[in-house]
Length: 397
Image (cartoon, rainbow, N blue to C red):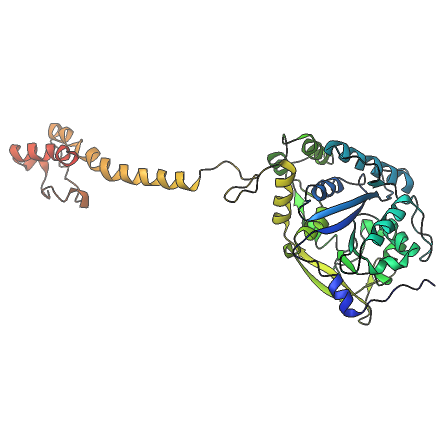
């Protein structure tokens, strides 16, 4: 049996509390070709150097209708990462690594891969006070294998894994966990400082739509156009359709932990039949409860599109009147009504003379300088009629 290092409760609490200031060293493990969200996460991480120092990226395996096998899924993910690197002009040599080609077959036996070795190498450069944040947004085979191969890195890393669902979700059927449940079990059982970012119940609410992506990203640059077209290709019907961009939640949380609500709690047990089990005596992890969708997307869109950090407008804001123009427009209407309404009223008086109408002048506050008329115009003396008729002109003068 592998002897994993044991951290005290206080050490765990310190390590699963993301500092709000300073830079974080991160290593990103991603099943990039599996879906359309990992590409956003890679781009977001690489465009946030003020906060994140990305040490490397590894390709995680996956097996579904987009791959012929777990190995094929890993290879497709690797090539998709290279595509994003090419868009950004980043040399992938010594930075992007192929991962494991099969899930774990045993909880104590790692799968060998270049990704596993790269994670270990970067972890050994870190320290307990300045750890490496190993960010997993796919099956966690590479991360679990690194821990199994070199358990001592537990003292130098904090795992941030997007996998599993919230503890109160009806079940724990979640893609990243199901791709290698033994690897997930290693993460939850080994005692590594860990932050779990649940899929359903948290990042499942990180929704966007084609109109929003077109408004915020289309035409900004080639990589943005690629991401938008990638999302559009995921569905033939975009009417009232939205898509979770799950994986940006992990990057957004690291950039600003205040954008999320989380709790420290005993690590759950990966039980049978897609369920969690709980034991209050187990070591602590941190689990996210909510994350602010708008703040994450606004930050990501602004960085991806190259827009400046603006305060009074949003890159996604639809056409509208600026506040100052709106106020001026309303004021103009009020002034126009105040000045011209009496003129319009009194301009009808000649017609009343001709028709012998019983029309009476309205008693308006604006006409207070006029003589109040309460008798029909036809009974008014001619001299008074002339005086009344020219009164509006006198007001304007």
